Length: 597
Image (tube, rainbow, N blue to C red):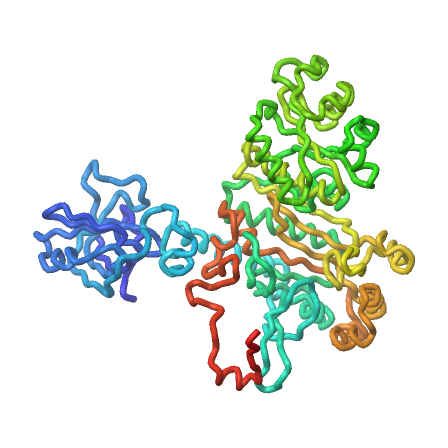
């Protein structure tokens, strides 16, 4: 090794020791006679002193050093003079007196400061990601990611799971998103697909008798990106045989509780994890991935407003829609500008507008509320008793603001979910040190695509229906519930899983219900159906997203901050400038030709 110690490991116990360090120059300070540099490596920073009275050649080399130079230094560990200690550094009680040094590699001036935690344009950071990773924030995020993955492996190993790698080049099958296709040179005109997930592969492993499988799996989906999406991502892929839903949920809760308490003990958890049905969470939060760190639950006001004189409410209900609302505590004093900001949020989603009712001042109770105290366009169309009843249902008090939406149920839920998150953010209701995990279950197995007028799986093609609902597949598919469960945290879906179909006749029945012909089924899924006919156990699994959970543990707002080399939101790799063109020779080898249009 070119060094005997890491910079961050040195302390008072090393005083008097002769050591050799190697790393990057974090800062350089020339005090005339003495030169000080802060030397940085992955483990930390230590101060090095170059004294011409101890080594003039060493001092001369130090005068050439600049930020981000790669250097090696040999010297003696000493206590810092009294009064010069640096409590901000773990090594702040000591320093290294340099005896010998050499510059391994100089550095150009970086495009942004490495040693300062300042905002830098993200595209610039991604272009020079190898420099960005030198910064403390990214380094800590990658170390946290490593600790999370290591904990998962150790935990599952102790539970009797084995890690099995599955192929990256597989067959293209419909699983919810577009596949990334890979042309075959050896088989002209044919393609592999990169796996959206190892779904069928892990089910085949259950047929194979593996029983307890996991994998830190790379997955690929060619879809439009969001802050928490990437074209390639990492998930914990997990599957078990001879189990029920409760077995998976209990394992997940133990895994994530233990993991957070081990790798991020300063974070708080809600224990045990709450469990909500899909219907409950949609009614109370308008989404199946609610942030449970605060309340502001949605209330259905349709029965109160159905007989009101407010045409907006009446027409929505007459058209089969709903009138729902939430309470924004203490926001009755919102200005017109602030109310317009809330209105813009719902209009972006396609709503016509938001109805607001400000409940006077914060003095007194709802019994003291009078018409004169109200501030709302809708107040003249509603009776005082109706407004009081609405306020009571939403848990409001004097000084609060009612936010009410009317329209189609799906749009109302979506808009109130956004408003609830916005108010929670504005009022700082969500504890940043809290991880509010919850399980959502009892999902519908299928949902109707209104454009294609075809049934689609709520989760995926292989989810088993509830045993008691199987008869409804022929008569009322909308009534069939799936053995599907999600784990959510702080407003994000962290994991999705299900008990799988394990017989070929039921799987074929689901395929037919989804509109596939027998010929299409045999072509795309024949390998899986045939496997089921050789004795498939009852099995199920789940796939937590590694990127998202590390993002939450790190306190970041998008997963790009916890991935070493991520793509931009337009799926571009700025470090390698990919995707890029290929040569005509490569296209010829793959039997491909580009069209001009």
